[in-house]
Structures are given as C-alpha cells and as structure tokens.
Image (cartoon, rainbow, N blue to C red; front, side, top):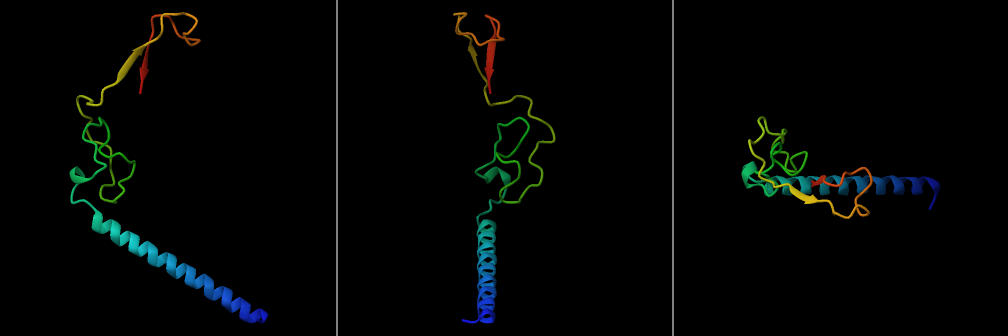
Length: 106
C-alpha cells in the first residue's frame, strides 16, 4: 500500500468512527426523550422531602426543568437528622471537642 493510499484509508476510518459516534448519540438522545417522564413528580429522581431542592441531581437528567432549587424552601425538612453523643471516656474523645458536646451527622 502506498503512502497516499494509507492516508486515504486512515481518513476514511476516521470518518466512519465519527459517523458511528454521532449515530449512537442520536439513538441515545431519542431513547432518553422517549423514556422521559411526563412531569417531575413522576420522575424517579424527584425528591419531595428535600428542603431546598426538587431533584436528586444538580441538573435534570431528562433536560425537563432548568431550575432544580425550590423558589421557597419547605417549612419543615422531612429528612431527619441523627444525633449521637460523644463517648464519656475522655481518652476516646477527639481532640478539640468538649466532654458534653453533641456531634451532628449529616
């Protein structure tokens, strides 16, 4: 194979790779649009209990809603915070903590 034929072949291969990638992207986009829920409330990622957000993700995975943050936060956060007390033994207490302090998880 001559140098010129090799260049043509490589160029053809690159064109075919790009065509396959674009076809796969189009198919994936069409599938995502077909699987898209009719409203946010029917979406599997919808979070009605979050105080400041409506969605689990920072951007809607279906491209439905541009704004996932609530305009007004919920009055009460339904997700419970857990509290656990520090151990009574002063040797186990992490440095910088007081003996009667409560550590918040979350």
